[in-house]
Amino acid sequence: MNRITMETNRIILRPWRESDAETLYKWASDPDVGPRAGWPPHQNVEESLEIIRTVFNDVLHTWAIVLKETDEPIGAMGYGPSCECDLPAREGEPLIGYWVAKPYWNKGICTEALRLMLDHIRESTDIQSLISGHFVDNPASGRVMEKCGFVPTGEICIDENQYQGENRPIRVLRLELSSLHGAT
Image 1 (cartoon, rainbow, N blue to C red):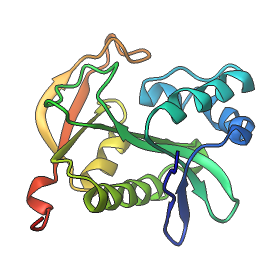
Image 2 (cartoon, helix red, strand yellow; image 1 turned 60 degrees about the vertical axis):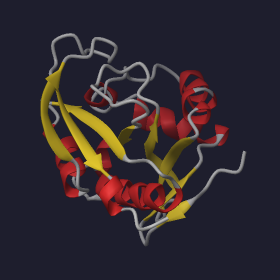
Image 3 (tube, rainbow, N blue to C red; image 1 turned 90 degrees about the vertical axis):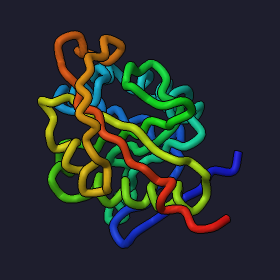
Image 4 (cartoon, rainbow, N blue to C red; image 1 turned 90 degrees about the horizontal axis):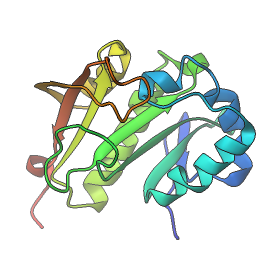
């Protein structure tokens, strides 16, 4: 499969590689990272490798966020079908998701990566809108979405499919892309 790579001055979005498993485990085993995004901390390198082989490679549009300075993956960015998620998505509306390792929080990296991915979506797809959400106890994630043009829908949902999601409300946001498309 020919997967696209994108970059800015600071970061590269590239496909995950099996050789990234140890680095993924280093960041994804942090108990402050995964639960904020709705997934459990990784327990070992083998689990991280399995995530790369299945979750990150089965979804057509998932990238490692690589810091150019270190050439090391420090997070993930992607979009795809709204599967295993109870967000109120429209028919065929993709869900976006991302996370970044704790040492890189509050440095604008997720915002930069999301803008890069959104530019790619606008240039290469006919997607009309995107949906996302964040646990209300993780407002930083919502700020990333809002900086990139996502607008709160006013909907709050509970998604028991998400790790520790039973009693954690999710604030839903949407980005309308249809008005941004030029004539085709």
